[in-house]
Length: 148
Image 1 (cartoon, rainbow, N blue to C red):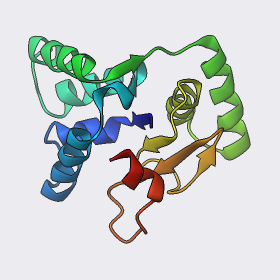
Image 2: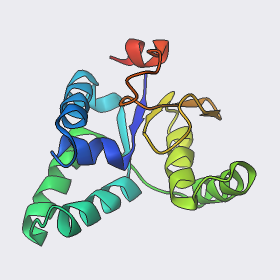
Image 3: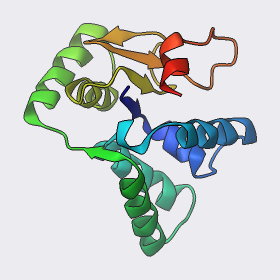
Image 4: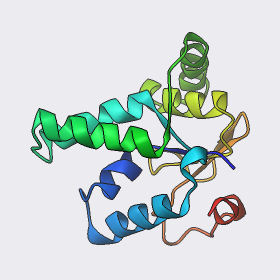
């Protein structure tokens, strides 16, 4: 099963955030198959911004981290079709354009899950269900369990 990862999952996996979320993100990513883990190129761009501005990493460190991520996941390009879908998603569901674009790229790449804390937990669009893996009170999702 293909699983898309949002920026916050990668940020936590890089150790920026509380210990519980950082450990959960690291554990989740370790359990996913690299060939089924999808990261939109936009997510890597957002990760770069966090690594440089908030974590104060040098440009060369960030480049190495981004290349390392690209070695361990499938990096999905943003297409014009995904962008058009994101515009509709943003208008129809009042989701930020950039979050909508991540969801649209996930759908375009046949993902069943998007792991993110930036959407309504359980929101499903074009076959992609958003799961917040950090929401402790939420019921575990069968899809997430089967992906792991």
